[in-house]
Image (cartoon, rainbow, N blue to C red; front, side, top):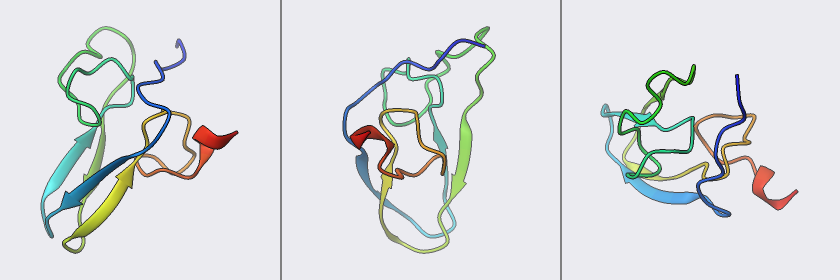
Length: 78
């Protein structure tokens, strides 16, 4: 499988709602970053489901190198 496209050099700050599911783009090709728009079809990538356990602000990975998908772990700094 190819490496994902680096969509951003910084994370995406998103206000999430408790109980709602979010589909994070793992391939980096989505035009609606950080969320999936189906651009991965045929690539071997699949979106990562994130279900908010509380209403808060989270930071979704933009560089697509996180080891804590879909959340940012600071990988964009290294």
